[in-house]
Length: 303
Image (cartoon, rainbow, N blue to C red; front, side, top):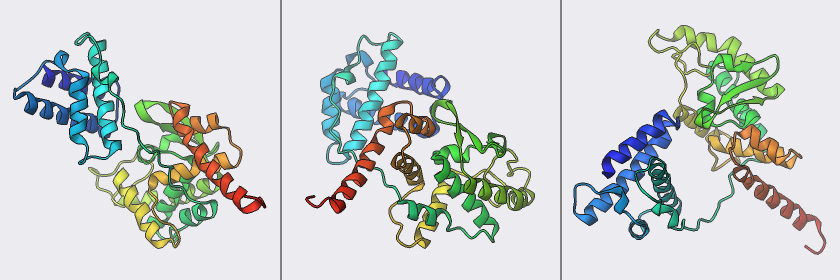
């Protein structure tokens, strides 16, 4: 029955595919929403997965319009497709009805990013005369220097950093490992934090809290969370004049855009970002095209 199959699928995501807890929650929420809706329509306590067809799924998607954005509806459909794909592979159903349903057309937004001047100003905002300022500077420098995700940054351990070669080992989505280089400014900020601040945070932490393996710590010696880094970035946005509407992820977009603008190959950027598909990286060509059009409009006499 549908309820048991959803539970089995979520176990598959957790133990076989090693997806992140955030992704697990999204799948669980989307599938439970669909299950609740279809049972309310059928007026039953459970239903066979094989009895669900594409028309039922289209009807559910239609019910979502008005209360949900197109991006949210598209994600929910993708969750159903993956779920039924799992059921087909496990021989629980004969076909995937969600494959026959068209994804809502979504206007693709270009990722927010900073100019080179604003990026430098922003990462240099923290006051390195303070313990927290030294840590925050190292965090911002590393995010901009490597383009890693915030979840990857907070998951990093001391053993992942090679200061002599200026390399960091990153554990990305689906536990895929990659090696990313970083520059001299990031190295200097990192060494300042490691030598002058991190030992203080470790010493201040209770044994039950402190994490001696973690690279980036809060002042009580425990590993930072993605939420903590989000608050940290928000703080410096408020303090940095002329910088608006960016998030920790914007530093990743800034990293990729600046590499492309300065001649880096798209496939090299794909490798550095840890994208499984080149299509995920190609959005940055649109960002750079905007810049080219802007230069053309300013420079060409008949633009």
